[in-house]
Image (cartoon, rainbow, N blue to C red; front, side, top):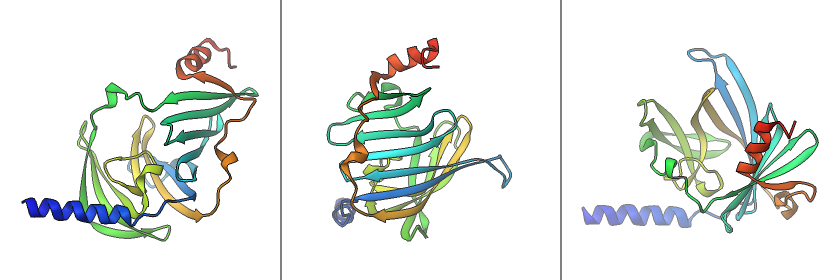
Length: 213
């Protein structure tokens, strides 16, 4: 048993050491299907850019247009950038403060048989089961890129290339469509000087009161 555990630890360590810091852009396509059909209910793009220490995620949204999320992995802080009626807001989030309500994982993950290439990267299948309703879905991860750039299923230290996330609108399917390893300007991760920095509570109070309309 001890030998088996040691072998697994050494295998995981060697796999992680083989991962090089990634600098560049990852482009995903997100899709929600009408249940029990092949009809697309909603589809949008998500673009992730990183210099290995800071991550910028740009998401197309109906309400706020292109929504930008900047996460500084070194400082453990993040900002959500949105624009409402011409005024930009940088909503602050301290990532060091854990949400006690979400402290316990709501899903089980097990490695499964099966691999496929996604955006040119060989990816391993994992089975994800929601503890709440036993719903299960297959997700894929590549060992070539670290999982830290994308905040999804953190138990697996590899980048998710094809995965599902439950939402109030339905099950969202994310698929990696393009990978570009290229130099990234640090300006990509800055907060525009004309954006107002506020806390999440301040933003919600303003949004509910209608001040941002």
